[in-house]
Amino acid sequence: MKPVKLGIAGLGTVGSGVVNILQKNCADIERRLGRPVQIQQIAARRANPLCDTSAYAITQDVLAVARNPELDLVLELIGGVTTAKEFILTAIAHGKHVVTANKALLAEQGEELFKAAHQAGVILAFEAAVAGGIPIIKALREGLAANRIQALAGIINGTGNFILTEMEQGQRSFAEALKQAQQLGYAEADPTFDVEGIDAAHKLTLLAAIAFGMPIQFKRVFTEGISKITSVDIRNAAELGYRIKHLGIIRRSAKGIEMRVHPTLIAKEEMLAQVNGVMNAVMVQGDAVGSSLYYGAGAGSLPTASSVVADIIDIVRILENPQQHVPPLAFSETEEQALVTMDEVETAYYLRIEVHEKTGVLAHITKILSEHSISIEAIRQQAVHRQSGLVPIIILTQKVLEYEMNAAIAKIQALPETGAPVARIRLESF
Ligand code: HSE
Image (tube, rainbow, N blue to C red):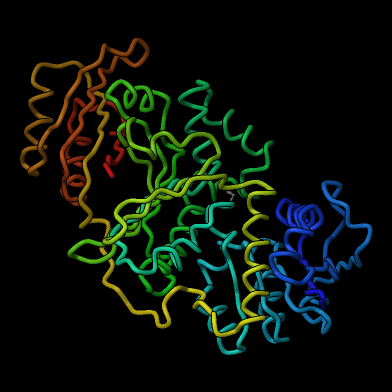
C-alpha cells in the first residue's frame, strides 16, 4: 500500500516523541491504517538526541515542509505563535492537513485558522493541545456527542498540579517545586503560563468551544494563578478536609456559560482531589451520561505524542473514507452563547484573614459578612503568629455571588484590625 507521507516541523519534546512512537509502533499503526506512515521531512534547528532521525531529510527551513508537494500531512510542533501560525497557514494554503499541539495559538487565533482550514477543505487536528495524552477532545466531540454538556472541571496544567502536590506532600516551597517541574520538562518555556493559569485558560477555551459549540474566546476566561497560594493555606485546607487544586471550570447556568480558571478548595474525597503530580484529569457532566472522569498524563514527550499520532491516524482514516468526517470543533455551526461575568458566579469560599488581637474584631468581620448575605459554614481562630503578632481567622462560607464577596473582602481589608492582605480561595464540590 502507498505510504502516508508526513512532514514534521519542530523536534523538541513532542516532536521527538512522535518520531519514537512512529518508529516503535510502525507495525501496529500500519495494521490499523492499512498503510504505513512514513516520515518524509523534518524541520528542526538541530537534531534531538532523544530520537534517531538519521534516516530522514532534515531542513532548517520550516516553510519548506509546509510547501513540500510530496507531503500528505504535516505536524506543527514548533510552539510559540508567530512562526507556528505562518507554518499552519502556509500548509493549509498548499492543501495539507495539519496536526498541532499548539494550544496558545489555537486559543488566541483559532477562529482564523479553523476558517482557513475549512475553506481549503483540509483538517486541522489538535487533540494534543489539551491535557496531553488524555483523548478529551475526542471524548467530547464524539463519545459524548449525545449530551447537552452541563459542566466540566479539569486539572489541565500538569506543572501547576505538580507544584501544588509537591507543596502539600513534599513540603517544598513554591519555587523549589517549580524548578523541579522545569527540570522534568513539564513547564512551558515561560513558566508564568503555567503558574498564572494562562496555559490552563488556553486549554479551557478550546474545551468550551467543543463542549458548547461556541466561538473560541480566550479573552473571556477569568484567570487566576497559583502563585499566591501559600503552604499555610494548603495546610489550613487539609485540616478542614480539603485540598487546593488549580481547576479550569466551565458551567452552564441559567445566566449563561461560566469559564474560569482559579485555585479551588475541593473536598479530599472528590475524585479530582486524588489527582496528583503532573497528572491531569477532566470531569465532564452531561445530561445523559451523568459525570464521567478522564485521567492521564497531561504533559511529557510520549503522552503528548500519543495524541498527535492518534490525530495522524484519524486524518488518514478520513482521507480513506471522507464520508465519516467529524467537524473539527464538534458542531457543524458555532453559536454565540451568553457568558456569565465573574461577578455573577456563585461559589463557596475559604478566607484567611489575619488580624491584630482586639476585642470585637471577629464581631466586625461576621457583621460585614452578614451585611452581604454571606453565610458562614465554619470558622476557626488560630494561635497568634509569633513573628507577625497577627491572629489568622479561617472562614469557610456557603455559596455567595462573587461581587458580594468582593465587596465584603474590601470592607474587611479596610478594617483597622486587619493586618495583612485577605487570602481567598474559591471552594467547589462536583
Ligand atoms: N506546561 C504544560 C503543563 C504542558 O504543565 O501541563 C502541557 O500542555
